[in-house]
Amino acid sequence: MKESYRLFQKKLVTYCSPTLSHLKVASLFAIDKREIENYQECIRYFNRSLRTYQLSLMILKNKQNRLLIYLYHYNQLKYLLSKKEIKLFLQERHYPTNCLHATLGRLKCNLMSDSFPHEIGIFLGYPLYDVNCFIKHKKCKYVGYWKVYGNLKNAKKQFERYECAKRTMCHKIDKGCMLTELLNFSL
Image 1 (cartoon, rainbow, N blue to C red):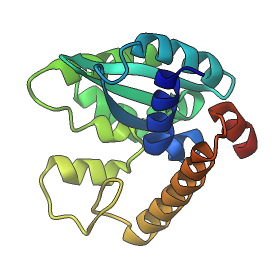
Image 2 (tube, rainbow, N blue to C red):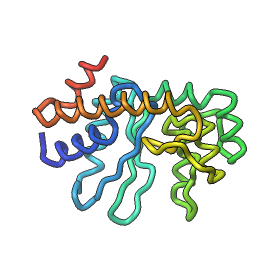
Image 3 (cartoon, rainbow, N blue to C red):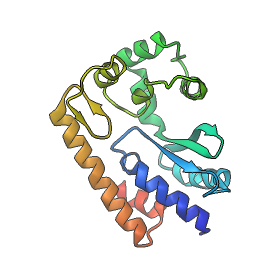
Image 4 (tube, one colour):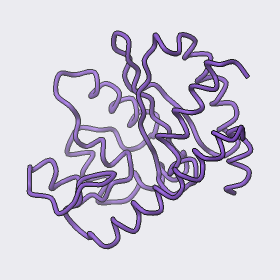
């Protein structure tokens, strides 16, 4: 495997282990294009491998030397975004909600604007209550993978599961395991 692929794989596992382990609907990570010059080739390569597991990578933001990459579980995201309260939340923010591709396209457009789309938390599987409170600048109870305003006990348990997945997957990648081996193991 090319060194750039190894570096991309390491970043993918480091920042997206909960999604790769099917514990989380989606994750984001950034790369420096100068560090991984063949990033498009890497994304195509890993998308081919991830497709088998209903996982997809897409570039959400491409600015100067940085990329913001989104990894999502297709079926989980489609189900999440079909929930009535989520659809209403997104429709209030002018998102099309009848097609996942169109919804993600709108998120991508919103990320390119001057103001940051705080509704991105929905696309990462954060609880709607927490996303709403964040948007309204309320005082949070705890900060982990997201700012928690609601059920702290459940959120902390979820954060622990995410950290366990991250430790396990990163350890295996460091020992020379390939991403596809990890994904086969986690099924």
